[in-house]
Amino acid sequence: MNYKHLLVTADAGRADIRLNRPAKYNPLLPEMCEELASAAEQLAARPDIKCIVFSGEGKHFSAGFDVTSEPSATDTKSVWIANKRMQNAFSRISDLPVVTVCALRGYVVGAGFLLAATCNLRYATPDTIFYVPELDMGIPFSLGGVATIARYIGITRTTEMVLTCNKVTASSPYMEGFVTRILEEEELMRFVDQIVDSVVKRPSSLLLSSLSTIREAERGLMPNPASDLFTMLFVDVEEEAKTVRTNYSKRFKS
Image (cartoon, rainbow, N blue to C red; front, side, top):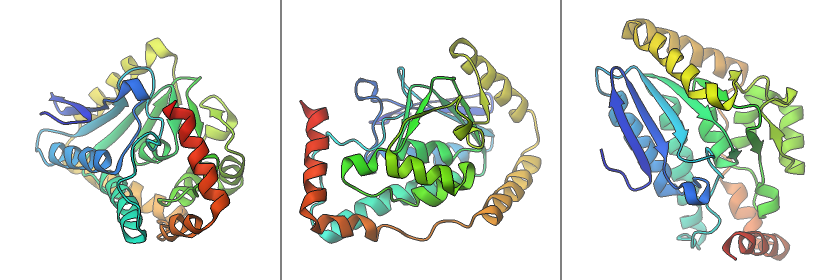
């Protein structure tokens, strides 16, 4: 399978999807998220595929939204549509009829953090760095991000991460509810392979029924977030926020 931003393979009951923009730490774009969701849905529809593993090519999972890209959306409606595309893509991945596993290392930032949250199982190295830089970027943490992350680490810790933009490692107590297990770099993929091997041996009917009850439990603990896309439009009218966005993007374009 050939994709613009992804490396995709499939064999023996599993599929692997790797974000493939390593020179920029695998940042995300709306069209890249749609490609990611489409690839995952096509793979998950195959009768032989029971598990999909998501990872990033190179040393990092994802640096979040690509602030170096030229904005394709400038008017109010286009901004709303672009953000809706990303949120819909994450929702499609979270509802796949297969077990999803995420192998995390390096940076797991903003939208990349949310992509990791769509997976059922998340394995990371101790020094994997999680953070939400959106306020530093001059935008709110939207796409349902606050409610999604709070589901796993609690509203108090989520609040601090959002308001301070502080970086947190996988080995921090903050991430205990988010990271399934912490593994050293040399052990990460070997352990993920073992988990996947155990999953693909199970009947699809048992996996599907289990995924259904697990997702109901997740939604029971914290309902799916209501739309917060309007917050992106709200900050667009404030000059101070616009200046913050301009200055942040310049840091990565120079």
